[in-house]
Image (cartoon, rainbow, N blue to C red; front, side):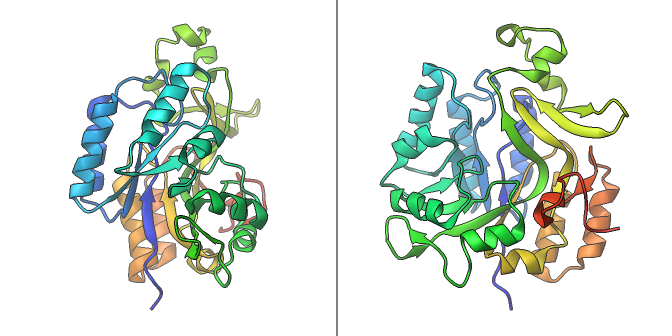
Length: 309
């Protein structure tokens, strides 16, 4: 039998109310998820959750048998952002996911996770980060599966971490709207003709982001504060064989406001219990998640395309 594919619940990328977040993670605690990534990774102005709230959630999830990872922001813009990054990287109870190069420096010499926004696109780059202490690599979301397999092939994985012979685990973004880019500007505030510093936290009104369409009315991108995402939900539930061939041992599932419990159940059934991928994809499509399901990047095609009919 194939070894278990571990399922990671990625950080919540949207601005959800505190009550919603606590209820969401309460459901995750009873789910098939193996790992949960916590923390605000998009905008430091979002303040529904305090540091002590995240730590309390971490303790509760760990008590339920989940591996907890704390993630740092991908774009730091101020001294206060740097202080928050240092606070996250200073704690040693939980593994930390580096969101940018500043976190890499703070974590050097300790085991850590390479986040998807750290630019690792080649085997030499992965070797360099392994020497710093990386034990896990979340591949950049736009990489195709065959490219991922060449960076860290399962037959000859990169080794590093605290022990030089520890193979680096490959985690692939397998479900959710793809986080594509960050900007110093807040696009949600701009949509409402507001200044970034006086945004009114309008992104809390869009629990799955704000869909952006072309002039022809076709879904194109999603605005999420300073982050730009894909319009469609990247979905690799039909790629079990290709993912294993690429060396993936973990799949990252990015939270959605609705139906995420079904997402977790479908991926666990297909990847770890022999479930039918076609039936699972149909179940996910029936959720009518915003933007629909796509998988173009995984196959070296435009991200909005999909490989099935």
